Image 1 (cartoon, rainbow, N blue to C red):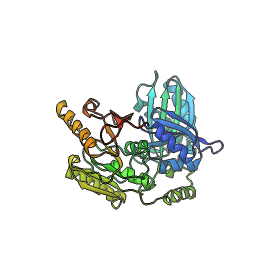
Image 2: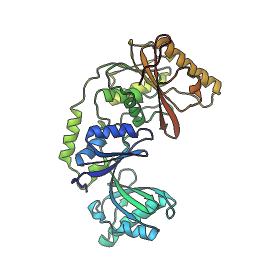
Image 3: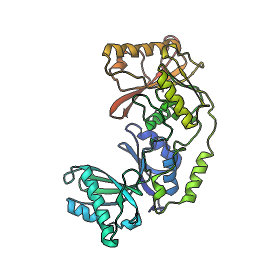
Image 4: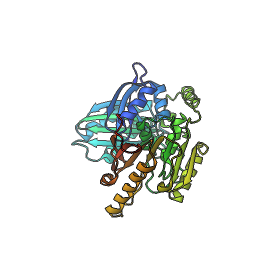
Length: 387
């Protein structure tokens, strides 16, 4: 199924704003011909690379392998083209499948219909040849197929990941609006932090930032707890190669060089973080406590803060503005020598923060546009360092 000569084309999906971070990860993993796309990065590599991206890339959501493309200007032409693919290379009649579609053009207006027509073409081929057909299983199919239709261009892709790669398997408890794991990992990577100095998340919520930070500092594969990937069910799955990839990555795990701290004013958030740390096997490497930010003291002369300040959309803007001003004041007065990175979708509240950022990065959290900003904190009135 994979074309090893010259490398197979892979499309690795990510979140908007994380494309450069993912591209850097893919380069480190050995990918070639790396091209940033919208919410994705394309690259070329062999089967080993595909396995490694799924297991080791922190900002990947899905790893897709394009395997067939054609042009169609109507439903009949599309159906015939899909049916002409030799699906016995990928499926047996006893297997299951799931199809997801993205459409943009004139002859397909609805993605669900395009997915249904694709499924019909596949199962009709099996029924006509063998008298039996694969069935649909949207949760854990033998083969997950993605369809992209833009105008008359039609692409069929195999999903090697299975469940979305943001599902690390450690989240056992949450508080309201938990941060996506891939976004949290991308934020930590964007700061350039690799575990060489203390890290603090003073509004930790469910603990996603400190957990992803600890995994990064320890070189722990983000999918260490995952039991299955989509490619496990492929006909050309190489179990020996997979074991080599997993063993090599797991052998890199180390103790973090500097301490990591998580805290929150809310006891429920503190407990959720503790539960998730235990689930991730990181309870010995991240210190967590219940304390409000206005009472939290720096654990070291310098380090990095990364946090996602909560706010209640029901509050009046004055209350939100006061909240952000209090964060800025606390940073100025008590965290000199530290770098603070904050993400927020409340773009209006930033005006009350009272600190000038040295970096601004636009990200998207779910459907919310966010700013991820860096603030360098000094004693007195010192000029900004150059980035």
